[in-house]
Image 1 (cartoon, protein in one colour):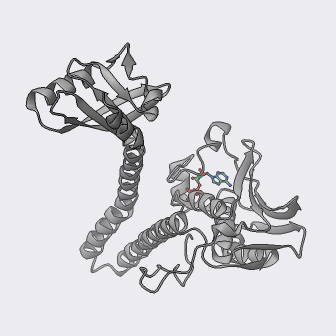
Image 2 (spheres, rainbow, N blue to C red):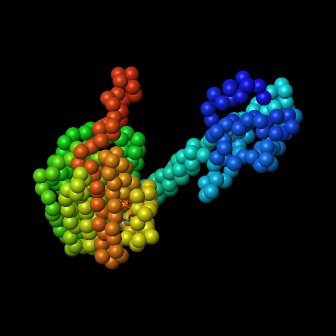
Image 3 (cartoon, rainbow, N blue to C red):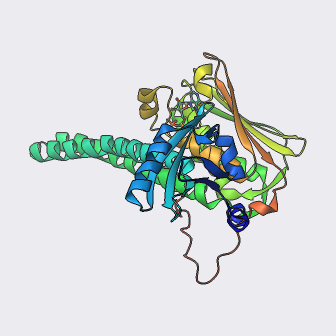
Amino acid sequence: MSAELTQLLTALPGIIVLVDEHGSVTYLSAQAVPLGLLRGDRLRSSRLRGFIEDVRVARAASSREWDCKRGEERDEFIVHASPFADGSILLTFDDVSEAKRLDAVRRDFVANVSHELKTPVSALSLLAEAVAEAADDSDAVKHFTKRMKTEAQRLAVLVGDLLDLSLFAHEGLRDIGELEVDVVVALATDAVAQVAQAKNIRLCVTGEHGLTIIGDREQLVMALRNLLTNAVGYSPAGGTVTVHVQRADEKIEISVTDEGDGIPEEAQSRLFERFFRVDAARSRETGGTGLGLAIVKHVCVNHGGDCIVSSVVGEGATFTLRLPARLDTSRLIDEPEDDDMPVVSPRADGETRS
Ligand code: ADP
């Protein structure tokens, strides 16, 4: 291989392999080394050797999917092969593993959303039929329309949570300011006070007062409200839900403790996944969408913090938001230029979950 060609190939980024007319590898870029492509001076993979043969016969550039296992991971590539006049073939590899993984996550998410939407939509359709059939029976009509309202509310909450999730997962932080933690706590507890009262659950706030935090008020209130909604929803009537605030080093910790059934240890690591529920029927009963904790996770990540859970089955659960008191300013989003797309602002009614 000429010095010029070697220089040219070395200057190119990415995974590159040059194979001569006899099938010997004459150049392998540094990025190709970890793939372990070679046995002696030949390509180890019979699929790649077959592909090269096809390109050699056809004398035309071509691309093919190819994958290889590295430890536990399977890497997926699109391999492009270009034949040269001297019979050698240049292979370049595009790593599409991450794109494929994201695609699978997206497909999974769309399937989950469709499934979640199907239940209230089918219920609404059946209830509409029931109303039409019971048109002369005003009691039955009242009963069915009340249920229609419940299903419509369920749909509205689900759509609201989906919008919040998509906004918080992709937008980061926008509306930043210095916030009084007491105010965040008061707004979140007020939002669940009515539901708590209906179940005769006492809401207690303990710990330090007068702390401040730099963050996005709407996001922080929503995260705490989601934790409180769960604490109230998964608690028995007559219990106590406690919000405790404390400063620990450079972090503000806000924990929510309930006296409910708790969460089995094996489920705890999955709680923050979208649509994960320990008990789907129970979640539906409490009006849950399965998205509340996924929203909490994104709010925490946006603030450079996290949320931890500790729970013993039968003894309740504690979820703790751990947030830096002073925000890393690199997390702030630049103001959009005039010709940027407008940003969708969070819904004014602030409604997320019942
Ligand atoms: P949901 O809308 O179903 O409540 P979340 O994302 O808020 O969805 O919570 C996911 C699951 O975690 C819930 O379905 C429930 O099984 C469990 N969970 C959350 N918080 C609590 C809690 N305080 N006590 C018991 N289980 C809880």
